[in-house]
Length: 476
Image (cartoon, rainbow, N blue to C red):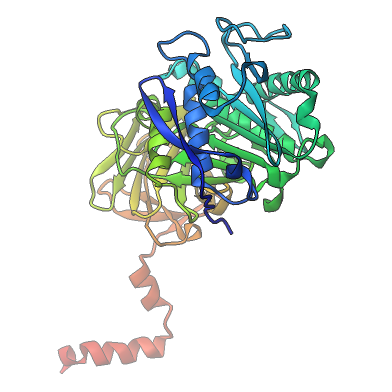
């Protein structure tokens, strides 16, 4: 069970970032409790550092260096990497650490419990970023701790790992006594921090006890696919995401079935928040609204982070069809025509890769999907309920090998409160009336409405009695 920690007697420090500043709690006692309990003060400190990692309009490393300085870290214990314009960049001249791509920093200090090591990973350099980032994030995977990690994020992790080993050689004092570690990052930096937190948790690495490794990530994409570790193995990693931010849902699966049965995930526990806003447009438009680090600072500062486990509904349509999504009032909230998202109506999160449409729906509302085939072929249509906390599918239903021909129309209602296994896929006639029900193997049978089906399933003698009770007066 996750509960919020609380520490008294802390000082207030001001962390500046591009376009603003935030007051955070700071002191040695901040890291006294176990890292396996969510602490909003540590989360706000982490969000501030993750945001200060961006240069903005200032020179390389300006904000993150000043943040460390404000917190009392000494220059000799601060190392920046891939901040090429800063005087503390790459002090031992490690290879590949002098460009301006995968930037991060390491700082340490002595505290009364031993030593504190802070690692802050910077996110994508340019925010707002381009659609190239969205597409490039769907990349290859590589082996990592018994699962498959995103190759690009793994590269970031290995850069930090290499620098850490070098930093420890240059600062041997951090290995004396108890070591507390804080790992944080936003966006791309969050993904690297997520892998780094999991790596620190591996007992074979022998850096620190899991209860002394604090990992807080913000807007992290998913970092791995495969069998999830036991909950306790990564209970010290907290991933904070905005439910309307599309980046934490990346990368998209390579195919429709993987999206449901082998989804990408994050190590640790994901804690979500929602500001109740929406924007029309494609994925990149929503990212520009809900992904910036300032959004996350505000959410933590206002304590919007959910303490429970929020859920969502995902759907995937892999075939030559156009898609329309309607809410429970009948208003259209999403449309894909010829594999292009209609930005004029799309309130929900829609994304298309080749012929595969990915659709994410708020769980608390009811929705209706209209599917219109544009060519011959076979369709895979899947729906799943997932937990933001783990991104694991809680319920799922998949229709495969659904025969298509141009003009064939289908509908599927995803009703709030109804179990996903009860979702139906119906074929419509030219008047829009359901006439066929599609089974999960793609075969079709005559559709019998629930009310009619209820009546027909009764014994014939009971049907006659009910006719007499309710309609007997007609015969008299």
